[in-house]
Amino acid sequence: MGLFGGRKTVFVDSDILVVGGGMAGCGATYESRYWGRDLKVVCVEKANIERSGAVAQGLYAINCYMGMQWDENQPEDHVRYARNDLMGLVREDLGYDIARHVDSTVHKFEEWGLPIMKDPETGRYLREGKWQIMIHGESYKPIVAEAARKAASEIYNRIMVTHLLMDEAKLNRVAGAVGFNVRTGDFYVFRAKAVIVAAGGASHIFKPRAVGEGMGRTWYAPWSSASAYALPILAGAKMTQMENRIVLTRFKDGYGPVGAYFLHLKTYTENAYGDNYEPTWYENTKELVGDYIDRQPVPTCLRNHAFLEEVKAGRGPIRMVTKEAFQDPHKEQVGWENFLGMTIGQAVVWASQNIDPKHINPELTTSEPYVMGSHATCSGAWASGPSDYAPSDYQWGYNRMMTVEGLFGAGDTIGGTAHKFSSGSYTEGRIAGKAAVNYVNDMKNEKFQVSQKQYQDLKKTIFQPLENYQVGRNEIVAGTVSPSYILPLNGLQRLEQIMDEYVGGISAHYTTNEPLLTRGLELLGMLKEDLNHLAAEDLHQLQRAWELQHRFLSSESVTHHTMFRTETRWPGYYYRADHPKLNDTDWHCFTLSQYDRESGEWTMDKAPVYHIID
Ligand SMILES: Cc1cc2nc3c(=O)[nH]c(=O)nc-3n(C[C@H](O)[C@H](O)[C@H](O)COP(=O)(O)OP(=O)(O)OC[C@H]3O[C@@H](n4cnc5c(N)ncnc54)[C@H](O)[C@@H]3O)c2cc1C
Image 1 (spheres, rainbow, N blue to C red):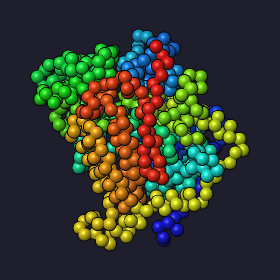
Image 2 (image 1 turned 90 degrees about the horizontal axis):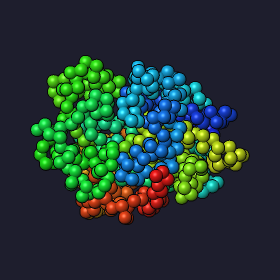
Image 3 (image 1 turned 45 degrees about the horizontal axis):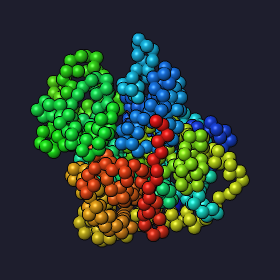
Image 4 (image 1 turned 90 degrees about the vertical axis):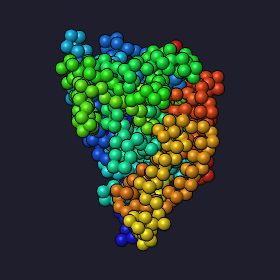
């Protein structure tokens, strides 16, 4: 069988195509069916929606719930909170839109069987913090997936989407997507009137702390491979805040979450000598960011900053003081359950390192940077806002539509809206789904056009790494090394090293400057040339090859954005050593980029930040 000629091509036509069946994708699928009873809604997922995405293993808390039924918080409060945490820069229209709908999403989850813990005295959901409610969430994802399965016309699992299709009848309009089945190798052509990208964020952009056999041990799921950004970027969509990578302070080596420990168990941190180190860095931080250090709660990046400075001053390791809290049997149980419900690996790491938190205060660490749109960070695509709330600069069509017509996004895909988390991402999926239905209905009988040439060319491109391997393996000089090709793992490690050393990863203490970024871009350019020679021994490696391509494009975007913003807006996430301070005069704005796939050039721009809420 020839590599291209004999391969089966499967055509799937639909009205709405959802790419990625994680939290946002399941929300988009569910809501598209609700508003579009007669429409064909298809969801395509590279794993299996039953256990895919960042919530695959389960969660112990839903981190975004207003509690409006009990007057606990209002949507405006959440916008203020997210704005403060992101050092002033969020899309308030998008954030408000999610906050006003998120409670109804959580109520649906409960209706579908998700056990939410209750406060025995008040009967309300048990709060872990101001925004978080506690759940027994091991089965969170299967519960959410079941609703999507029932809503979808068809779900396609095990298909990695590699490219979007563009309409040849109308400039700048999407017309579907292509990909391949990672088990059978069949080529899939999904033609659709509207596409919702909900493919999660990006790990393994920067070199991880754990390497070699431990390289999968990262905070963010290793399968989150930047498709959410690469797909829109390649289609010419504008991206925003891609420099705003996130660094997490977590338990060392297992990356177990610290939220429940701080908020519920009331544990606290100290340096190697038992001192509270955060006040030590108050003046230093004030010098860099001014009044932002006085805001409550202290922005996440600034808490990282104090941690990093203390470690650099030689007073690490930083530890979480658990010994006191764990004397209370209830708290001890909650502490362990917190991991068993969502990060079993942390419990295993502690067991393997002889750490019983009742007797030993465990170490914390800061992770390598990740690119995401739904956590304490807001990288992603630039999207149109809600018609009743967004300023005119933020409105050019349907809610959550990107700058490409018919292309929508939700969750980690959409930029400018931090602190959505699982419930907010699902909610944003619902918002995008409803808008996509309106878009499709408004299209009426208008037809899109996808030529055979367009998808046949993509087919050749997608399977080329298999061909490269077939040919190049004849020249293997030792082991798997051939002068004719580059393997996905080698390419990934090269990418991670460039990003780490030049764009502000762990080995550079999260620090970079213009000369480093310039050199980083040069090296990325050389890597790009070599990626034309990626080789895949089998379908598994073919998936790795395309994940690398997606990570690469997103990394280029991150680097251009980091170069463009000549200030240090989020110390603790990254530092521009040549512009060490926050500069509200010039940079109280969003950064925008657009990629030209013909020339390979990036165009950078600024967009205003509107403060809609006082
Ligand atoms: C470690 C960690 C802990 C978290 N803890 C909490 C918490 O305690 N509480 C909380 O509320 N939130 C938490 N969150 C946040 C929450 O998980 C995310 O906000 C949410 O999952 C984002 O939804 P999403 O749909 O954008 O991405 P995901 O849920 O990650 O879904 C993306 C989906 O796209 C699929 N996909 C990717 N690429 C492709 C492709 N090319 N083709 C087809 N499919 C593709 C993936 O397989 C995946 O199913 C946590 C996140 C992380 C990473």
